[in-house]
Length: 135
Image (cartoon, rainbow, N blue to C red; front, side, top):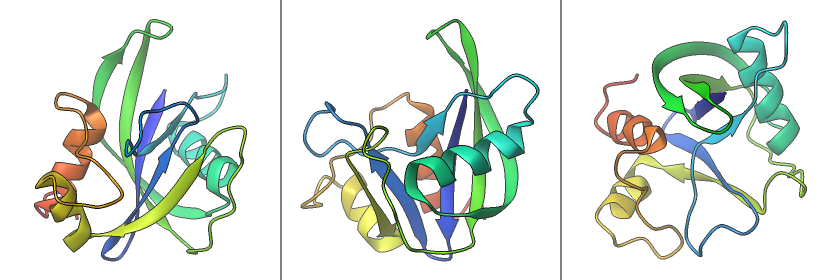
């Protein structure tokens, strides 16, 4: 499984799956197909879910993923465009969030998004990007 923090300068692309609790957004994620590289999976999943093409992809970290007994590979990806075209079968919503607004999310003061769940690799990615440790 890949999970990716898609960046565009001072912004991140975040999405929410149908059925998630109100205010819950996360980094995009998806399954690697047989014979597919990690980088290709990141680009394909982002394009399929949001229509945003990506260029450079970099590995950051991993964590066990129990569904279905997999490994989640955390990456960053650089967006090549900003227009979002949602696949409604995959995502209910997606939006670009600035570094400043993400700081408000982590402080619990954002009007659209609640803080990411502690211990989740998406939270690790967002917190490290916010602190300037992924650039």
